[in-house]
Image (tube, rainbow, N blue to C red; front, side, top):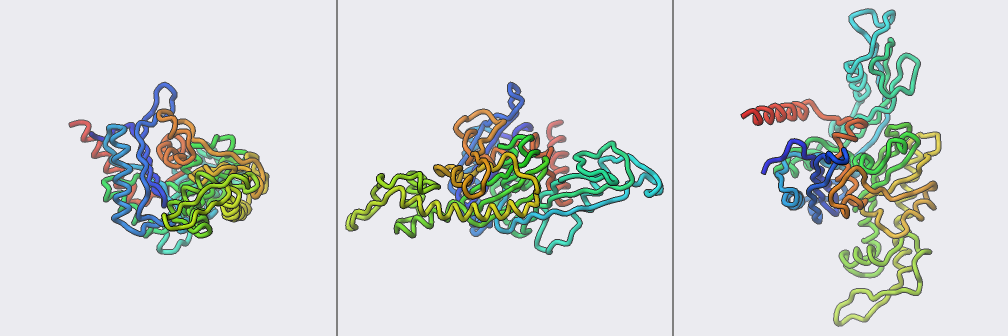
Amino acid sequence: MVQEKRISVGLDIGTTKVCCIIAQPDEKTNGMKLVGAGLVASRGMKKGVVVNMDEMVQSVEKAVKLAEKMANVKVKNSFVGISGDHIRGINTQGAIAISKNGPPITQVNEISNSEINRVLDMAKAISLPIDREIIHILPQEYVVDDQGGIKNPVGMVGRRLEAKVHLVTGSSSSIKNITKCVEEAGIEVIGFIFRPLASASATLEPYEKELGIVLIDIGGSTTDISVFFEGSVRHTASIIIGGNNITNDIAMMLQVSLEEAEEIKLKYSSAKASMASTDLDFELPHGPEEVTRHVSEHEVSRYVEARMSEIFQLVKTEILRSDVKNPLTFGVVLTGGGALLRNITSLAEEVIGGPVKIGIPKGIGGVVDIAASPIYAEAIGLIQYDSIMGEDFNLGDSEDTILRQVLQRVKDWFGELL
């Protein structure tokens, strides 16, 4: 089996799960059709950082093999989602004189892609710590002379071009460790995508990003945020609290194992305690020599609400840091495993304010159960990078990465001629 040219692969590596999605273009719908999926428990990852290389490689291999078997193809390369405490977002800007072999001050010149690349290079030329690298360069707007709010200045004329951008950076060592794990599993990393940006490509409409919306991806150990306004990314952040913290709270308060606490959370809890019954109780797991204990759904939900309220308060703080003066018309979209908690939208509306909804992946056909779940929003967003994300987001690839990809494409081209 060989990876077909038109196959797209997304690899979502998280603290609780590793998910591999394989898709191909659907000629009937002009969208993507899911042809393979693999989901396994994650081992070796904690808070977005690799803590056990061997376990992480095994988890990736298992997820990929399941997806390969279902799709009957061999995966050679993939986009990979990334998150964690090491991720940082920053707004910056750069400016250049538009010169075409003449005096830039007196001569008005046409803007081409060359000028776009030069001004983006200026915008990203900021002083970063030696252990950090750029993952994304996300243009917000361009300014030609004194005219701002321009999304695409190619073809326009002027003397000075300015770019306002949002940079997403990450720890070089963390990125290299994840890269090594994926490559040891036999897969080349095409590029890394920050989790909420991938989820956004699968769940948000262009008009939502234009009028203002916040995407919150609630994972096992992190809650990732991206704020969109006027069609561009205004703020990104990663909070090191997620669904696992709720599980830990339940395990400690009820004195049960983490596995039992996770099952209780999914089966009996509500994100709002007031919407859980005080009369409905259930029996807690116990050994043969232990006394039988019961607890109400309301009591368990109190622990869940306390932790989720903390998460949403931290999210609200990050939203205020986005420096968006206008109200975010479309409020909040929730994705990730944490979005499956009962009544979570009601709690989010109460704490954050504004309308809240669950983000369901769009533009994908095939396995309906997978395509309709917020758990798979990131992985599905990763496979849509070429058609959706590529229009909005740029990868901050190093020269070595770009050269390696070009050489691989040339190698594949020659291979097709033989």
